[in-house]
Length: 417
Image (cartoon, rainbow, N blue to C red; front, side):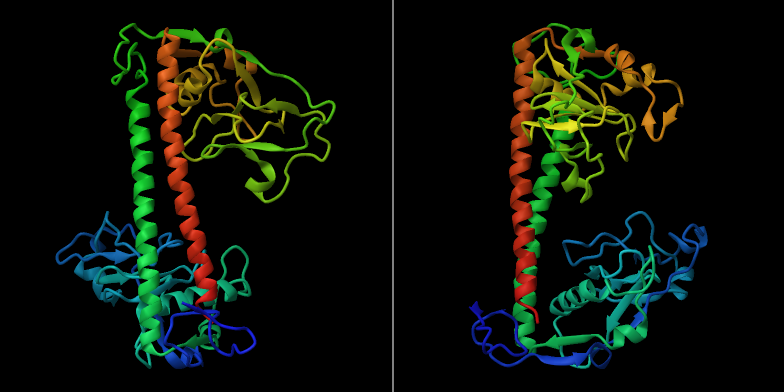
């Protein structure tokens, strides 16, 4: 690829494939393509419109942030009656979301019927590569949706769409760019599948390498260990930490993310939620655990995480902080990634009581929860090391995936006008 000198740049991208030198043509979107809204009968729950004779897939709004595809709704297909009231689009049609998170662009993978909140691009005035066109639309929407009127639900009118300026090269260059991003998207999708598979494998191991409720041994176990696991109160293997940040040893405000653990509050929320004066907060040190009693999607009893990313930080006193004293710390990390501890917390929490979204469980009750753990410190260590290695592999794949997405973002900025 050749980089274009800014001093001679006109209507061309910064980065370009060799052999192409012509200016890109600037046109109004309304002059180049026709578009129309999808149409799909409401409400979706009407049984007469689903799984009937001659049923076919339909496309709904899905998250297409990182790939230009929309998948069919695999749960239901619409009947001939619904098809008569809907808009059909062939495979390979460019569509864009118009409601909520507007500007998500995709190419249909199937002959489909489309949701009314999708805008369909079709009947291009000149030969156009669909993938190039999809990225052109995506880039344009990223800019224009910020200007769109509306509060929570943004809208872009047909008149505004028609007036969008777009820049188009000759078809051969479009196809070259489209093919390049197709290859990049395929690579990203491959890495995403590998990452998803690793996460599923971890989920399976967490289910099999810890005893199910009521059992004393796990389904899957390292060789050489045969003893029953034992029930221990948390208070007998860990101690509470109530250390205050009196001397301002740290000004790093932390929060617990169920997915990412103890993280910088500024990064997580894009702002600091903690008070400016954090001397009254708990001072948490590397290797110590904290319990966030706030429930979130998929985590009905909150989350318990260890501080690994920083040497120290501060946490609201609403959290329960503790450190291991008679248990392998890495084993405990994995234990609290299972659902094994949910039953104990639910038994000790005040039934049905929530305070501003927080589970109503006192520190004393929390430390009275029972954990089922191996008697052997060596078995604890082996389990902890196994999951640590698995986590490191997942983190490595996540890092590779993030780099690929950043590369794609950079190419999108430099290869389009």
